[in-house]
Image 1 (cartoon, helix red, strand yellow):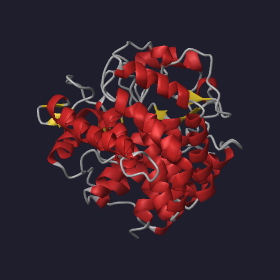
Image 2 (image 1 turned 180 degrees about the vertical axis):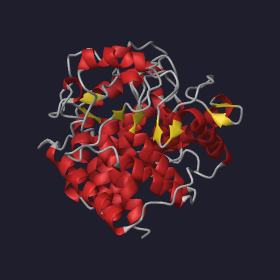
Image 3 (image 1 turned 90 degrees about the horizontal axis):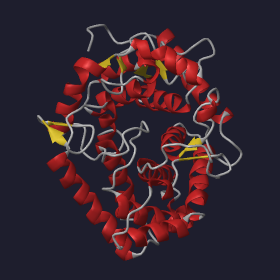
Image 4 (image 1 turned 60 degrees about the vertical axis):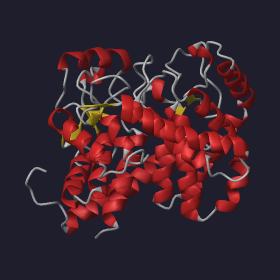
Length: 376
């Protein structure tokens, strides 16, 4: 905490409320008729839909009462996966037979809004989005009391679970689409969250449900054995570096409860270098100079709520809202405090200005605002 009184006066609350409504409008505007969410409209490489980003966005929209929007995305995910069930079958058979798999053969992580795969080269071998969509699906159906809809998703849930059970400990790219040769702790948290859902899903064969439940426990044991150093979680198994994506292990995936000593120690270790209002991803980050990420600042606020530090959460909300532009657009990251400023120009020349608006940023603001607004 920085010692200032939390911002709770009427004018500030009105500003936060207006930004929340604008966030909903931004997300609606960039949701395709298919249900897919564009990650961001101003970067050509972001004009796709990611299972990971979209699952966070759909969950935020569901929590905000935008039920049809959330349902449309989750149904889009169902279609994406059902059309690739044979690919899952083949990959799982080869894994069980001990055959090597080329990274290019894995399920993709980003798709065109019509569900097609892109021909562009990309770090597609990512697993966290497949866990994330199961987590978001379950939370949405429970929230809106639509458990009767579960049967429509059973085949997609089963295929996703079999894929994750087979490959959970296989190296893949992390949620930042980097370091494809590692097994990432935040990715394992997403996988466990999804498999926890699959282990109880009606219509999924018992053998798959049992395998999903067993894998969740295996993930927890593996993380505690190989994903901890000096009492805190680390970026990948066997490593030593910190990464702010480790916040996801508590919020929202609950691999560990927010007040678990391991999570408390992890957040404490993150704070000196990476979290000071805004939140950097990791110390060596050179992407757009290594700025502070809006979505991570909001997730830290949600973590603060989970451990009962409401004042700190208000400060996080204030910081996020202060970085909306004149159109109330929230960016991916801000450059006021760069870890590696010499790298900023390189990325601007390669891709142009940083993503703005980023729908994932707006979604995380919506979550934090909603959690705090409910406490007024």
